[in-house]
Amino acid sequence: MDRTSTSVTALGRLRAVGLRPTRQRIALARLLFEGSDRHVTAEQLRAEAQAAAIRVSLATVYNTLHQFTTVGLLREVVVEPGRSYFDTNVEDHHHFFCETTGLLQDIPGDSVAVGALPSPPPGTQISRVDVIIRVRRDATL
Amino acid sequence: MDRTSTSVTALGRLRAVGLRPTRQRIALARLLFEGSDRHVTAEQLRAEAQAAAIRVSLATVYNTLHQFTTVGLLREVVVEPGRSYFDTNVEDHHHFFCETTGLLQDIPGDSVAVGALPSPPPGTQISRVDVIIRVRRDATL
DNA sequence: GTGATTGCAAATCTTTTGCACTAAA
DNA sequence: TTTAGTGCAAAAGATTTGCAATCAC
Image (cartoon, chains in turn yellow, brown, green, red):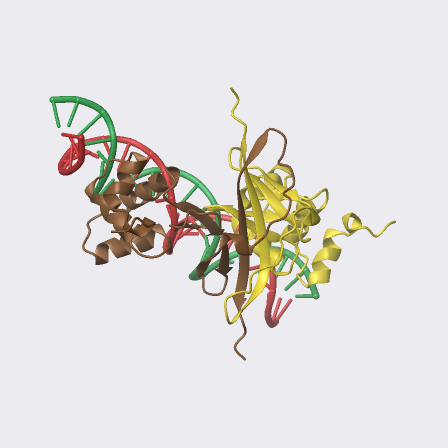
């Protein structure tokens, strides 16, 4: 048995962050974290749960996504008005966002170098720097 | 009379982009562009219009903001789920966003250097690069 | 006149909320 | 038990839409 992050159980993850491991949270954690990094919306995750015969209400999906975000298991990405994406990759990294298809993709953290940052407004501290590279599908002529 | 951008009339701006200069568009353009750069939401702009005794429906405010964005008079900035800001500064620049207060501020384009960009996904072209520096108010102890 | 634009109200969509019910410890 | 968590349905927000009335040209 190795100890790579993909082998951490859903139960273990929940315990590690102090969230009570309920049936729903365990099931959603499995959907989210077993497999490679991904970006999901609440609605998408609910649909997946449904497809996997997991009974979870949409309200609980929202609660869970926000709780996971609060404890650092997920990261919220805002690229479109009126819809939130949740990213299972919480490492330092940035995003490509295709305005044509709505597809969001990770960019490895070290392949975008943001130079010296300007000092933040007085009385504030930087909490995060988001870089979103917006792209468009080439016109198909 | 100088020719700085602040002296361009609302009428002139609309003509320049080929939008029919209606009473509402002229009034909103005045609110938006007479004065320094700003970030507004649809609701804020409607409130300002109301305060200035300009009769405009919210639907028209939305239409107008989107039309102005399409023709390059405004730029849409998405930092929070569920709310769009429109920026009257369409030059190349980035933003500070205070998660505590919701305040959005411009960062001059040249004070954030984004290094070599990774190549965009196959079949796509970069349309824009957004850098959002998220900050938080210092805890007041 | 004629087509573009507007206003209004209803509809849509995502997300949040209140509260009775259920489950974890 | 006791308290945290869940589901449902209603509510809340922001934005969009349909269509008749109005305006710019």
